[in-house]
Image 1 (cartoon, rainbow, N blue to C red):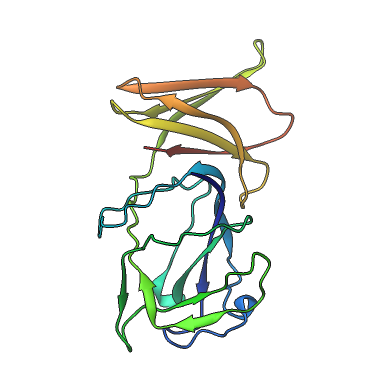
Image 2: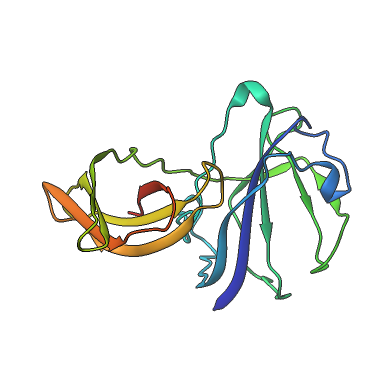
Length: 198
């Protein structure tokens, strides 16, 4: 089945098993929408620990554990039932996870649980830009970076060194040893981000 899903990450000062029942009181100031879109979601009723569905972040998020705890917020704008299906989780009072849930699509408060959904994060190695060349005559900017086989990259840019970045292209297949991406010269200075999607 296909569902609209939005995932937000932030750093919260709330400790596990001490979440407020008001969703907004748990959110950190660095809240970032890392994924928003429609995708097929498949639940395996007996697939404990199989990580049946995954999401590639559209925006990176930097987490520093010295600043607080990681808060993962999953929103489903359209209500649907997952009756008969289960997410792998843990239920241990006093451990490092807990949760807050609401069945209301626009709910501002929920019910707190000591349960936590088992989540795996796969961190990609950062991509280094080897060269950035401006061709005034051709009116283009070319970016060159080291690439590997079976990898897929995206290129984004921003006028100021802050999120969000504007996506220029994605689904760029790796062509080792390097990839080159060209696009029209911007009217002002730009910062570029090359991200490995898979």
